[in-house]
Image 1 (cartoon, rainbow, N blue to C red):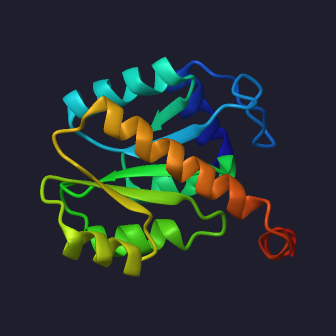
Image 2 (image 1 turned 90 degrees about the vertical axis):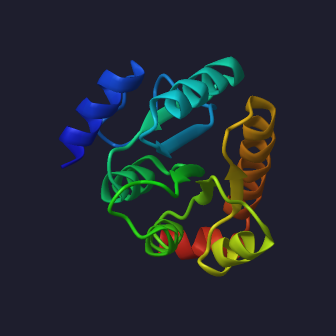
Length: 163
């Protein structure tokens, strides 16, 4: 399975991934997974990522996103609430509770306090409203990465991951 993921991500992003999950071409870069199907949103996210030196990988299913997040230790996952045939609540909870937790950011046309509270209850990090605005995407991803990076440095979290 790792070989298939390796091949997929190498083809999509043009990065070389070693078999042990190291990101040779992306060392020191923020890696983001986008579970987003809308072509316009994908293009915007790809451009924002490129402009900020981030590596954006697009997944076609929540299982693919979860597997990649675990194998690549991804700090941020963007998930489109409008993904067909997927319950966003279960997906956010599943992605947030994986063995290598990421900050899950829900992308939604409707963004209010109720939705934000529901995302947080499910283990998610934030809500981005559609239409996506580049400055807001950058702000939220930077904050999510900073939070994730701080969490990874916590001794209790480090012990849990190495166990």
